[in-house]
Figure 1 (cartoon, rainbow, N blue to C red):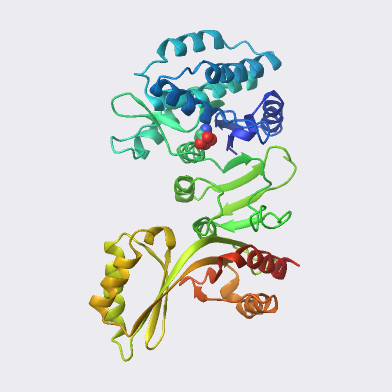
Figure 2 (figure 1 turned 90 degrees about the vertical axis):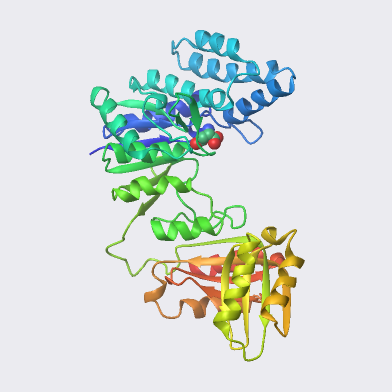
Length: 437
Ligand code: ASP
């Protein structure tokens, strides 16, 4: 059994968190490979090391003193090292880095030092080897990961160092320059390591007990989701639930590796398992896996008597495509259709889009309604459970929530309703209570 354990910034924010990580790793010998983010926030008002490093670079660029910020970074690392009684030579690392802090320092290199130093300390603390991502995570010049080369290099390194810590978030370009991923990229590194080593489980340790059924800023203490499929997770993420870096799914999915989201502060809780298929469904499990949503959509309704729907719709879609406004949902009636588009995508182009639709489609009318929020109930069990949509609409109706549009994902994984922006939070709460109560 081999487990790859990735720890996010909040799990590494200070010495106390490092101790929890050590306990977690030592409690299961299968946890042989550890991927770390940079130290994150210790409390709400604290700063993430990655943010401080970006800030240091911005100060250097603008010719403003970076001394205060940079010494905050140093103090964080010295604090962790000294409190844990470690000996890693941070002094030399920082002396070298300080010598490089000038206009020429590449921002990616500077920012990557957050993960690098966190991994150095963790490797000493756990007594594990250190594998630098700069030696085995490879990017092509277009910024895409060269997966094959990367998998081979990690597998090769792990033969010599089967228990290791690796910094997440960065790798190397073909010319040897350090390149960072998009924010939250350590999730991807963890997934790559899991794939490269054919891990049984990829554990992603964070500060919540798994993926929650609804946004905790809207619903008080939402329940964690015990099991979710990759397809459901994609729907949830698309509808605004931020869980994992999207690109971290592919490497584990490809190999059928289960992904387990866990809470470093509550290691006894099982967290959420993300899997390709769920073989045996318990009848007791809820029909809805989770509820997510996003605000600020615009509904464009095109009305035209006796229209040839396919031509008119096709023309309207082409116009939106020309203005780079992607259509989230389409509903079709006999003499009308409605297109749901993110309002931000139409911010500067709405009147041009309408003018073009009028010119090309020759409709009887075009109606615009903005300020719409989309709320999705996501659940793999919905197709097999009659009455789910009835219950959903009933719950919304009973609470006086006016539904402006309805869509069902073609794969029947989600039912999406459009409500006024001002009803967004209420709709999420009503659906959550309706399906969990
Ligand atoms: N430290 C980086 C960030 O804050 C990468 C990561 O945490 O995964 O985005």
